[in-house]
Image (cartoon, rainbow, N blue to C red):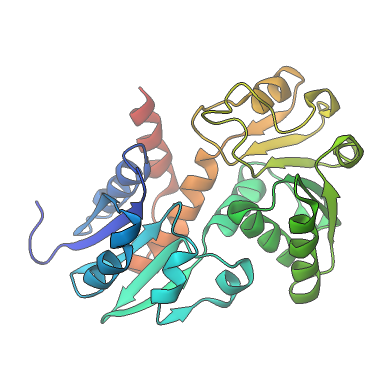
Length: 283
């Protein structure tokens, strides 16, 4: 039961009805006996600032930010975590006495999935990341902080890949190489341990497409996607057929949720409970 003492948490975005975060997070709160409740909130662009200011004065422990507001939120915050500043986007906000601090948990969440569930030793591995947008920026920045052998970042707009690599190499660790997302750039795919799709190619309306030439994938690779609807994109389907280990975007959802949960409550959730909640939601 929600009372005046219940700490609220929300996901703010445009068309968030599809989000699986509420079922996952509420299961984790209930498991620990916490008087917290997570709600989805659709926010129109013109109302975003008013909604954020209102939440900061209510009984909210914080909130999650999804597209298209991960950049917009930064202008309303009292403090931004240094990692989020380097990434250039915020997806999690903690509220303490009306003071709002922003974090980016996407990259760390995704990389935890690589390490824990993919069993990848990052310092011994090379990566091929497709895309240079918000999620790809977060993933590449956190990967760089773990000192991998090499991170190739391939993007259709090559200048964006160049800018991202320059920033990471200067501010975090010199390991990134920009590539065009064309035939020339994709020839590096067979040379890496891990292939990561950080783009929206594979989800509606592009669910019948792959972001790269799937013939370049081989069975000794881990192939990961930030997309979880559909559960298996064309890229993951073909990779699985070739014998690859595959991980979809639900993995990032769980582990970034683990980090956000800790920011809001000060304790760690049971990951098994969160994963089980997502499984039940698919049944």
